[in-house]
Image (tube, rainbow, N blue to C red; front, side):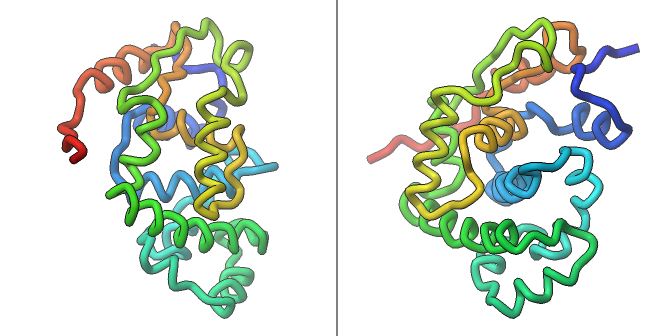
Length: 200
């Protein structure tokens, strides 16, 4: 039997851990999705958010950032009545604010991926934790920097702890514990570097 990280508890956790967590992602739609979901998770369990993930995809136009950026107060009111997502007004308003911020980031940096991955010089950080829950940090100096930069563009619900969880989710850091069968897989994926355009 393959051993997993010790934060995994539910079948939904298992599926997410095995297929997505720690896998390097440079897809802007997925990055925006994880930014919204990690913010929604604040104060709640990740299992709760995973259970509502399809609801979030429906509510937020499958995380089409341009569509979400056009959401109005009427859309917020509509979402407040949607039981398939977390009905927290501040978090819903943050998702829309973050979409607008991402458009500004894309205009300046070419893509959200270019921006967030620049904080790790384009390559995933490979950590070495014997046990995830006992040893992995809640935040790091890099997540502090990412949080500050995102806030500078107008993002909300992007504190350093949320940013570090985002970094883990999209594979900017490989925090699978050393005994986890998926640690080596994510490390191998990290070596498959994407082609990057040289800046002018």
